[in-house]
Length: 634
Image (cartoon, helix red, strand yellow):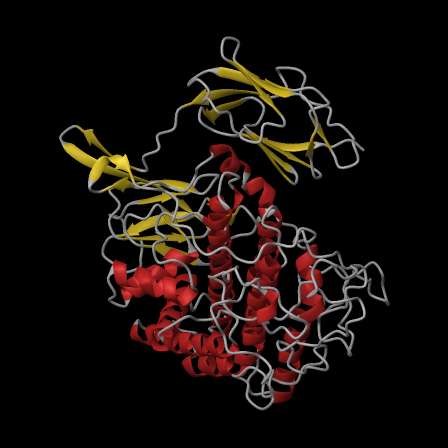
């Protein structure tokens, strides 16, 4: 079979393509350079670019990025053509090429690189802010500038909606930027959280949300910046208010050090938003299904609790630390309860029942949240930096499961939970752990369909996409866009693409055409975990990697380090929440697990603990995503 072109940027017939942009082609399989040229022409201006010109052509898995040395002319009609021998797949099948000028033609226009623009309208000066909202990029999300700081959108506050690519423009925006709702382009799902950023930010992300959380707790912006960098372990010179980690990961012109930093920051962002959204849904469920607790109020309470825990810890944190997750969840519930009472409780809000439900569910929710954070770490550890799209796709699958599949299931369980019936309560919570951790979670994650590749062509096409803010000392000069390089990590294993092996999902033995009633969302007819399987199936289809001594062999018994499962011998039938993962101490790691450090993204041995011998002596550790993962994503 010959390669198939699935998407391009620009699209054929596009009337709105930047004259400085990169042309991007996305195929259905990995693509390789053949021989010949790409020809980009408007009739009078023609550029011929060899497919083997590494300065102008980058082939990254299924993505081909063409970055012409010379910018195209503005406001002109171009086309790109090339012959069938230019691109091929790994077995030598040629792509049919684009041999006609009508197959990929587009109009160019100019795009200003200035993201803040002050312009005159009559006698008034108006400040225009162009920015972007992202978990993945959020389209049709509501944005407003909270001028009076009450957290509520008022009639006199600047507001707008994000466009199809997550961009937005606000006029005379004063106060904290607040983003809610919309659709996550990467997952295709509704975004069920709230993001914030300090006034004047040109990106709104999970990390700017934590940054604003510190500012709300009376830190200066400079102090908040240092607090967030220290907590999540990255360079404090990175300007989070203008830093787009998705763009940095994907853009082919980045250096290894900047791409590594982007990966760290993106992974931390994913862990943060997965926690805030999933835990927020649990709080809403415990408050009842009548809108007793809004998404905003749930997220605000959890954010305040998280910031408080970071401040009290006075150092780096691990978003896969069970003790931290449980503390933030429980204290977040107390904060939400206090705020609800201070503002006047809704008629059906039962404060006592709310607090008791969270207390009963805390261990179950913590186990699910910990595994979600572990899965992000594992995805990064197993990734190949030459395949950033694959890593982003794996992260999106994990986030889809955490925020939507697990989030919805836990929210519904919180609504229905009867704290007066202890037997039914324990059974319900055990069932949640069965469905949302271990093998069923792994299968659901693998089966999730995400839209990562549809969300990134505009990034690839735009070249340097991280917003560039004007230098306040020189309004005519932009400040540097790329943060200082950080320590590079262990070189990736060239044989490891970062894509987990596919796991067959057996049908329900009683009815092969229907799902089991206990099957979690996104899982196709998966069976309950093997009672001797801790949730990490042996890699029966993937032989040991001879270049990576830390890869488990097919004969490695499952469950060797499944601390997330409540019972190390049997995650399929976990104990009640009264029996947490470590029966001797639910809030501590096992004696064999080293204390949380700020060096998590390194290969793990079979026990899950980091080994000094696994890192080259000249390779500093990766920073940013903290904790020692359990290896649930093979």
